[in-house]
Length: 344
Image 1 (cartoon, rainbow, N blue to C red):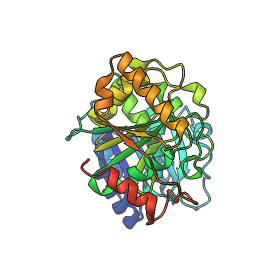
Image 2: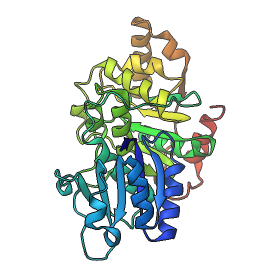
Image 3: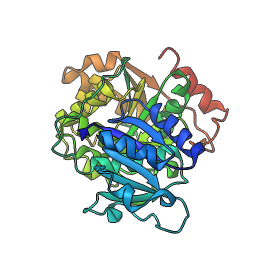
């Protein structure tokens, strides 16, 4: 039997099979070819020619015959038929049959994320996964300030959402603690610290891990920030650079926004990788002095190129920070951010 990396979706529900197949085929850089069928005879014909890397089926379609199809991974979508109930994926994997159960009726991107997580679980030593370079150059945008309470995260996230119509955007937070409820993932979800654990894995394996952790805020992609910023302090500068280069080379983003913190190693080297740097400040005396000190340090250590690509920003104070989810509202702060991102 021929071994080939294909994902087979088998579901007698023709509409679900069609819509999910269309979604998967529209996702770039997946590690499998995608095919779907709605009859067991068609499934047997497919699996008679190739051994699927992943076979995705539903409770109502599951049978001993399906289990014998020889798939590396068998993913069962719990559809309420009562045969199986989805539980935490890490506890529901049956090692004998490489089987896992997840919820069927959830957003398609959540289903894909779960499948990628299951598939990537045993690939730590796989050197053969191929990567397709991204078709367009990614612009890296850094947002950084030595000054606190200047709307840095608000500026970064809203800028990312406002850039959405221009292309696919990824937001990454390097802040010490997450201050936004909309960016806090469900308990047990992977975060930036977990992802960096795989930075020394082969690029294809790392890419799968990356895509299994990406979440969405509207059209904005993001990797949840580390639970504690102290987890990021020990990561060397070169690993951060490798991380950013891999994303830009393969992951099909038009923009990557780095919400940076001085607590990470190699902050100046990371700023040097950015196409544009937004330096947020305030207009009070202490803020002005801190900004002067920061720019003096850049000059002292020969990072004048960072200053040349930096734009000073002093966002207007607002009584209420706009929500990150839902429609982007109007207001003085939104207008200010829109003005700053002109020309990107």
